[in-house]
Length: 560
Image 1 (cartoon, rainbow, N blue to C red):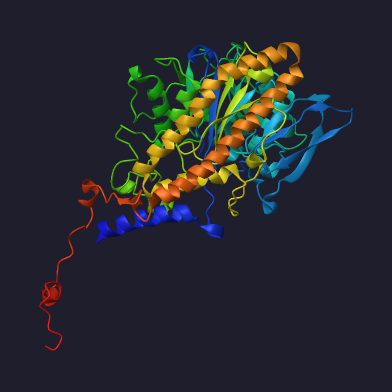
Image 2 (cartoon, rainbow, N blue to C red):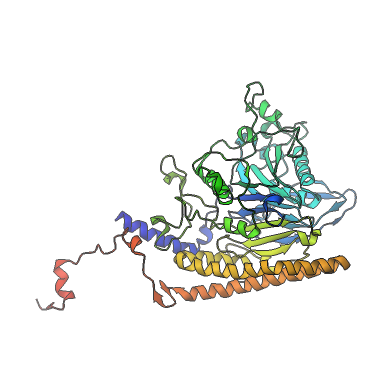
């Protein structure tokens, strides 16, 4: 009976995933994202790259926010809750303001802003940090998304952007949980980690309003972060590779979390990061490192890994897309295998209450790909091209497993409306997000079959974009050399065309999938269930009751 119930629950969960939970949907916790960073000498073409999977209930509408010049005395409003501003009842609250600078740069606004006109690219993952360092009750002004937005508006290099964000957090206070941000430019890749200064900081106290540090990812290496602090020992006498705020040592010492006389090395993650290590975090860190550097034979059960690794082979943007679609296939942790995956190898595992976890467990295995993802990105910053052409963000609405990454150049001045419409409570075909979210949910009905269609569909459109990239950028470069504004117009039109064609094709694809996979059939032919899955259920266990045998054999006399 227990096996039968498990099987029925799996099928029910798949159906609920398609129809949604409406107004009763539960918003996942914030600590869900995965971030990868690739140095320029570790990439196939010299690009500095970063990724981000925004794995939670976040605003995935994408806007271009123009830069400009500003008058003396102008002020900038600072908001709380920019992450969730996709609904009228979730609008951000103005909690303060700071002086404006004379010039700001165009940047791209989404839940976690990720790109500006100077090829500054950002990814993100939350690590929470010690609760003592959260400063929201002490008048601290900045939440991470606003810190990113101001940094992108004001920074032209990765180092400059990091310093801007750190200085603002020190001066005005950081109110958010621990965050790790990748900050990349065409030459360098950095990881910036920050926590609030907690009870030490009050406005005007003279104490720094945050504790932040940044470590450079070696040019020949790959970093991966998955919701815990990873920056360890630091060397501030080496400014080529480390940056930090004034409170880096003093805050931890004053609060009793670090003793400089104890003879123990200072590690940022140990002093300021969340203490608990578990496989929810470390498994993803292992998986990325193992995929790019299998020769290291890293232990998937290890608690800590190197900050970065040198890949066995150079990494491409397409490689990063494939990694972000990973469900541990071919490993002992493969989410497409086992009874929990249902008859058709569905890798999605919906949230369960932590009270249901077996002792010593954190619940389901957590892969890199995540069904509840709001959007996913892969960026390229390239020093040999002018900024409007060199910076390209491959943007995918919804889950990386089901999305199609579309190129958006950092010089574009506008974006299609379909990328600016998204409301999880209001299904609409005007929204790009809903096109991809629907297909990913529908695929749970027969994943092992449908994922093959999805992969072919992705390969067609992403392959076309990759194939066109050299020609498009060559044409844009020729235009740029004679008329930069015309090159920007060209790239804006090209980006719009790719997005519009891809989204339209995704809706057609969705319609096809509904028809092809319907009522347990594939093209009107039943595929049944795999024998190995049936063997784990109560299939065939129903016995024919003795009293009813005659009915089935045609010997029943209704007068008896």
